[in-house]
Length: 220
Image (tube, rainbow, N blue to C red; front, side):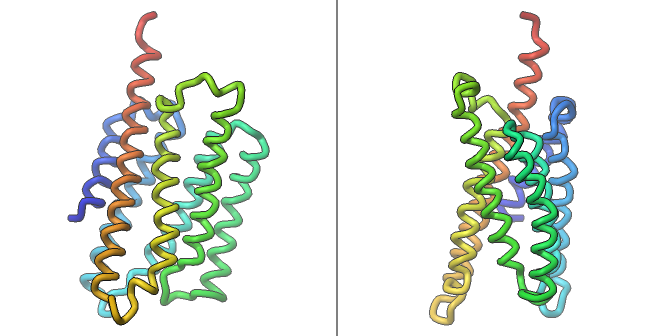
């Protein structure tokens, strides 16, 4: 088990432990999402071991669409400005359509769908920036952003997808013949580090949901 797998499980167990505090918010949907994530990683590892050609691209290609759809739904729920909610709502079918076009006409079935990843990553990074923008508006500027659970989700998503775009853009270079072994090692190291950052931020957000609920229930 890699460090990223461990932190993935920690995030899942943290969410389950904080279920009573999450169920009053949209953050509760992280529980089935993280369960699916763990399952996909498990199946992905098994497919590498037992598949002759060691190709598990299709699992992650399908999961990426589900992943971006889930994040689009969350941003739609947490955006305050109506036009941003409309953009997030439009992003969901657009992602599905783009992935179908990519599957049918561009990268097919035998490759990891980097185009879909770059497309979704761009919008997730954009949505994170829009969320931060909403918090510097006059009506929100005096509130403590660090105590907002979804703020930490956005921090993790922003760092993860910015890093993913860079590392996947350099993927072919890292796998070039003159540095193929070093390239694989660098890619795995950076990718796993980004996953650790992402799942740590998720865990922090779940704990904050618990703390915020305790504060709201405490007698004044």
